[in-house]
Length: 95
Image (cartoon, rainbow, N blue to C red; front, side):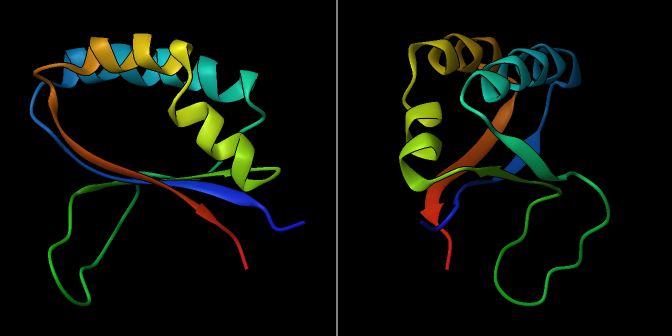
């Protein structure tokens, strides 16, 4: 069965609020079996629009990645992020 991934691209405008969100979302990630593969670090835009903060979280399968994103626990974390920046998040199935 293919792995599942949550991929995020973010622009942070309030580091304090974002840190509270990151801490809570990391707790939730563990509940759903997620393992961070990419968290920030250097990046270069090859094409299109890039964002400074990029995240890739690996899950056992697509269903687990999706469950994490739509969980009530993650919804609580998301509230902490309000007004702290912009983010695009997708759940994808691995190859």
